[in-house]
Image 1 (cartoon, chains in turn green, yellow):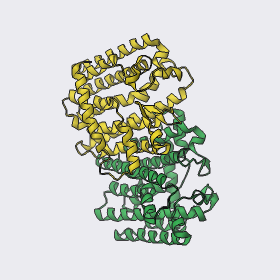
Image 2: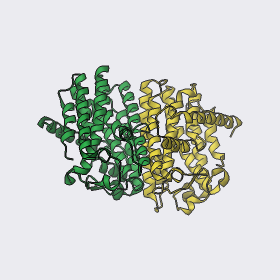
Image 3: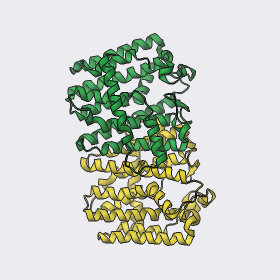
Image 4: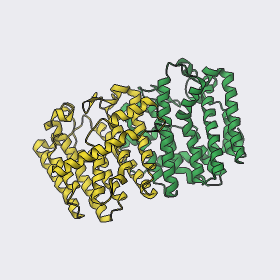
Length: 294
Length: 294
């Protein structure tokens, strides 16, 4: 990871996180519900999805401000998915990023509602943005619903539930991940292309980049679960193994998974090259996935 | 209830219900998730919210077809709220409209995802509609998010959770219901006004109508819980009393609640009169709330 990328990610993360408390400012939201939504929304994380959106806008010569509401909506949807994922009926997790999960703090009923509230308000935040032309805004809301809904993330989570206790083939695992995590990695890149009114060639290359990146991201997560830094991750390592989850490491071995990760990162950078976008944060972000420890 | 309204409601319900299986047709949705979403979406009910939208469009001289995607999205959101409401961590209900609730059939994890999927796909259905101009479409998606989200229904559900075990004042109860159920009764009327490009005067009068109607609807529900027809309702009567819920009947008594219902219905019809819309299905719908038995 180049120093420039480290600085860029830190700077954009701080800028973005400063906007989060404003999301529900001035809107008549029940105090406990607001607290529950903000608790998870402000619980940290790398903000990789918003940063991908900002980096893509920058490389296309546009200001990050143009993508702020889309990035907020996206992060709200990512956050709701974590809240619902952690519920007793789902993964039943007590800790997330080293902090008690939403239902452990606010109770299960409020956690369900906080998730529902974040998901719904994501569309409100984008719809309210007067800086985006209505045509792009409609397109982006439709894309977000596809990426996050039954065809995308929610469908992938159901696939994942149904795969429990089964050993998947590599192609099946890739298909689950493409929906469960890949679509919300692809979305910020594609949304930035819409907002920046990128050419068709640029958009197609960026979409290919984001698909390789999404896969690389998931393979990296699986590797970290075995070989990551427990303190930095904020959760115990080896949990996939204990839970007998299908992962790239369980299917390909640690070395095989590392090789697959390297292939995907190279393919991601190759896609950028096709659109003449190989110099900049997007290539650095792909490269960063090879070396991250958390 | 006039014969004309009975016929209109039956006809529109059948037309609308025939569109429901098409919502996920041709889209790559996991079979079990699709089945779970359609199970609840097709579980019946009066379809009062879509019918309100169609009736408003008709009175404003527009075709019901114009409101189809909005009505579908709205019903998907209403349905998701019932699925999540019935969950063990919420109301823990086993029966809804005489049928086992979603989590009893598909398991709790899939029921949570089916709810999330319906909520997300609601925005997709509206965003995909090419018959509506993009400006109205954006406005409608924003309005729906407000009506259904933390400022609206989800916020009202949290209010309701927090009111458990407390005795509310009448004004507090009205405030809870305005958000929990009122906003999704107001939405179809207001959305129809946007779609039909109604005048400001018409829109303001219609919004007042819908607010009185929403309150009347809730008071009617509370009355039916005491005095309704168990077989037609598909659930045992008296459950609000058993669960010590705050209702208009518990606060005002049965006769007091009936009087309040009658006042709200009259006020709803009065609002229509201000916009010269007192002849037609909207007034009939308000009147119907006085006499319904389920």
